[in-house]
Length: 318
Image: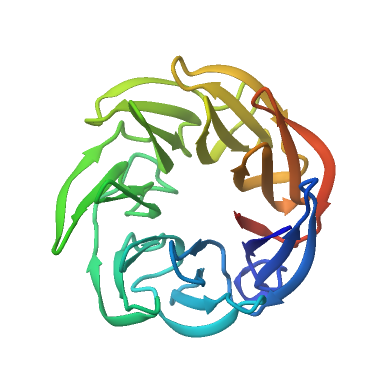
């Protein structure tokens, strides 16, 4: 067995979850609830790369981030501070830095971590401006995902149709953002040996780029009819996986050609996030269905019947 952490919305943030759910993962991939840690709106989680510390956003107007100690089993709250912006929805850790994407105001915050993984000193704050052609979703910037790659921090900005970037060394240097096609609404990205893949939440597509961010192709993220709002994207082995909200599916692509290999029902409603380890895939269905377990067969998810009932789950951390 090993430990899985599940984040989600709580009653004070529009959901019904308990905070952070701790689950034990068995050899057959099934999950059993092992405990909870109270937190407000922990819609995304990240683990320190070398310390027993778990970080959670608090997705509210006055955003927070919380560090939990995980050495003794159930998470123990160590510290909470302002996220540096409004409605934080994603975070990532790299060495001594914790990056936070604040959705509502587009603020990107870099928090310094000490040797114990706790917050120290004031954060570096990077606001943004601009918008896009969607009058409801792009009136201003909306930072959505933070990702570290080879000493650079990348942040998708759904509202401004940008991939923002910073070189992170002894000093942090803001670089020129990558401008995407207006109306793309970039939500999540993933690095690949030959470039990048980005989900367009507003245009319903998967976009491919080379290492210099030159576009190399795109494809619909779902083959089903109706409006689609793609969410998470992940590269695993020789397949690219995308969660589709609306069609409520997980789509599987060949990353070389962007040809769709399969599209399967997610086992619930509104797949907000998923995580893969080996042949196990877990989907957090935000609006219903809990956390659903799939086994990969030749890269295609097959339902196992294992479901962990967690209200309004939005993140799975393996």
